[in-house]
Image (cartoon, rainbow, N blue to C red; front, side, top):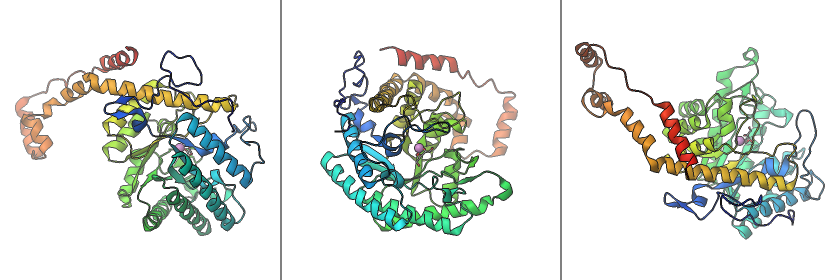
Length: 437
Ligand code: XUL
Ligand code: CO
């Protein structure tokens, strides 16, 4: 046992003060016809939870993630599997997500790295069978190694492109072996620092080509899940090509990849792009591309990706409002989040997940209430009601000509004002729903 002092985390309800209990996440509670567990397929991010020790630009690890053995060894890779499954079981988390280099130490020779990936995935598969825990998605880390300083699909150097292709191929093999529901492309360094040295069109064509090759190969080995783009506007690059959902969706459509790809929307990435989390979820949903979510939150006072555990119930509520309206996710809620550096104990890892799972459970409960309450949906329907009949209906049907609309306007004279947006009233409804029992 890696976490001997931590019990299986029970649900104790909102009045509990037990730090190791859920206050809102009650897996079997039914909300709008489905259990919380069905609404909220939570996943553990291997990299943050089992690998990251809190190193930042100014200091080394504070948290011990050695799990009792020497780091960088296959023994350590296996200890992480054991610790990770114990962790997920204690929290009732059903899924995990991984990069190739999270699950094994990368060797100098890719053939050896791949052999290690085969060995560890056999071991993970055994644990999956024992516990019923599943793989949500896999991905290849094509941004940490210095060879990827100019990107992977977007690199200027064809040999690096081939290396990236080899990593994608192997990560797809392992995703299929583990029965993963999805495969993610986060374009870590797919972007540029300066246009003075960059051929944007050339780079974007190459990225699309790498994605097309991945789709063709994935389908040929029986991968039936979704490919995802995880948009992010910047960091580590000054400008990243997958800036936000709208940009990534336009890219996928232009290159004919939209049938195989959906979005994996990360809260902190959306806010870095100058949007709300809800905005990027809505843009994905109306395009039929809301696939999965990287569940975290950023700090509005900082301009970078802080990957905090979600705590802001307004944001989780509006997220769950979008998810409920979209009929759920094909993917899940992956906590791409890390403890703050001074929260360095193993117990803190549990507190973080309890916080995040409770914040989403509360968001789900409140979002369902907003929908059931009906005042907001009713207001929106009414706001557009001038399109239900007469000239409005003709506009919506696409039958009206520009001449006809102009003639209508001339006859009418000046239109009345379009009606109050009632923003403050609507915001008070949200507070009313959030803070009444
Ligand atoms: C980085 C990020 C990644 C992706 C997977 O900002 O979010 O961890 O989720 O590569
Ligand atoms: Co992410």
